[in-house]
Amino acid sequence: MLMPQVSRAEPSALPPVRRNATSFTMQHWQDHFDDLGKAAIVADTTSRALHFWGGDGETYIVYPTSVPRSDELTKRGYTKIVRKRVGPDWTPTPSMMERNPELKYMPPGPDNPLGTHAMYLGWPAYLIHGTHDTRKIGRQSSDGCIGLYNHMIEALYQIAPIGTQVRII
Image 1: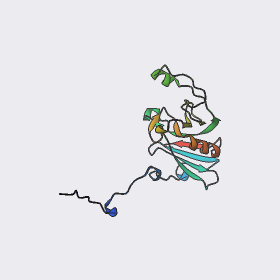
Image 2 (image 1 turned 135 degrees about the vertical axis):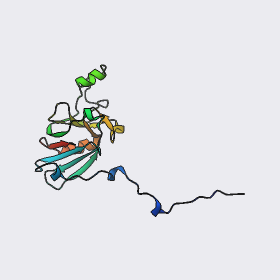
Image 3 (image 1 turned 45 degrees about the horizontal axis):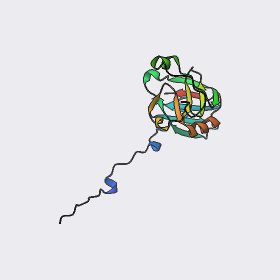
């Protein structure tokens, strides 16, 4: 009776595994801002990562994000955090209502697309916020905002003060 033969590749012959957590390109705040100020954020829509630097010059944290679905929805440039809210409510924008007239205002809660925390940017209707739908992180899934897992936006919310400078690239 013939037995099937199993061949195993030598570990050195296998290609390296690229894991999401280590595939982000490290950024340096000096490449984006003249000074660190209170704190700084770079949201990289290509790598789908948010880079945070604390005003102490020591803190550097990278978070995986969701990003806008298209370039038309992506506003790029410099702004800052102007307001923060725990338990944000959500109102669809006029362009969202054009695409789907059935969208309605949502109070805070588990169905709210803004998750548990929101940080409002100096541009109207652009936010960094949480999401209850964890499938969105790492994908082009938003209408312009930068989304984080709820536990990550909660952590960022605690350390990013109002006035934090933000660059979206």
